[in-house]
Image (cartoon, rainbow, N blue to C red; front, side, top):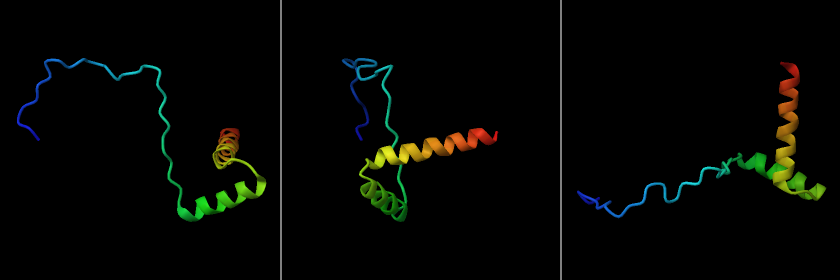
Length: 66
């Protein structure tokens, strides 16, 4: 690293986007990923759609128990 940096021409917030949404990467264990990949291919559906559907159903179950 340099001992000093010149920020005299810097622009505050140049890359800030207020309404930007970030996709959070989720890492599945290899065996879990393999299982759901096979199920999604067998059903002819997108893996992301299948996982999201399963998670939404799980959320509904948890919320129903509260």
